[in-house]
Length: 172
Image 1 (cartoon, helix red, strand yellow):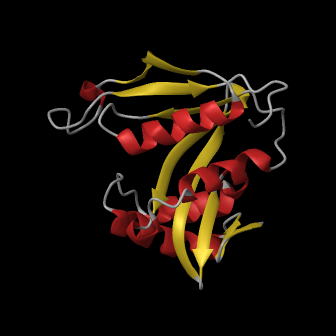
Image 2 (image 1 turned 90 degrees about the horizontal axis):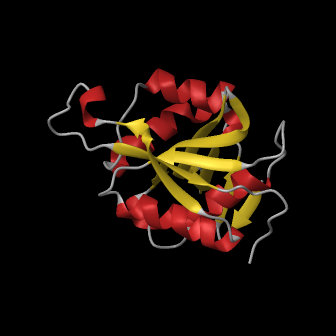
C-alpha cells in the first residue's frame, strides 16, 4: 500500500467491487462490464489490480492479470480515473504500484490492447516505457480486429501494445 498525496493506492478487496463498478460507469470512457466481473477482479485477481482511494471513495482502478501462457507478462485490462482526478498522474502511480509488487515470476512485459484513438492510454503506456527505458511496440496482429466485437461497425481495432522487456531495467 502506498500514498500519493491524500490518496491511498492498495490492492482491492471483494467489498470494493461495487465501488469499482460505479467508478467505471462514472468514468464513461471504458466498456462497462457486469458488477459481478468487478467483484471477481477485486477478489480473485486482487494481486494484479490496484485501487486508488480518497476519503473512502474509489477514484482510480487498474485491472490486470498474468497471461496464462506467459506468466511473466502482466496484461492490463482497464485503467480508470475519476474525472475529477485526471491530469494528476494517478494512472501512472497505479501502474507503478502494480509493478512494485511481488510477482510469481520476474515481470518481463506489460501488455494492453489500446485503440488508436485512445490517446490518454497510449500516452500512459509510452510514458511508462520511457521511465523504464524499455521499448513499447504495437503488435497489431496480436490484438483484436473490429469484426471480433458485437458492435463491429462502431468499434475500433485494439492492437496489442507490449512494453519491455524489463529484465534488469530500472527507472530513469
